[in-house]
Amino acid sequence: MAQVDRLSITMPPEVGAAVRDAAVRSGTSVSNWLSAAAAQRLRNELLGAALDQWEAEEGPFSDEELNNAVSALSPTRRRGAA
Image (tube, rainbow, N blue to C red):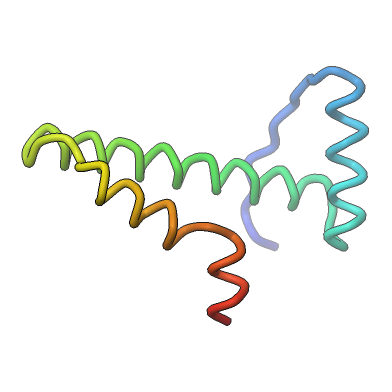
């Protein structure tokens, strides 16, 4: 059996209900859904730190660079590119 880290969490009832519903829609357990959500949050924080470091070394991103990033990351573009 894979090693796991058991956590006990609390959240407002409406958030708990939304998480349960999201897990059902995803066809996964609440534990797996929360684990994936936490992993995504950690990746986002690491990316944010990397971007902060980049700007500290290279200067702020230009408006053109930011607009290109928004365009490249937009959900409609990603769907259309697939």
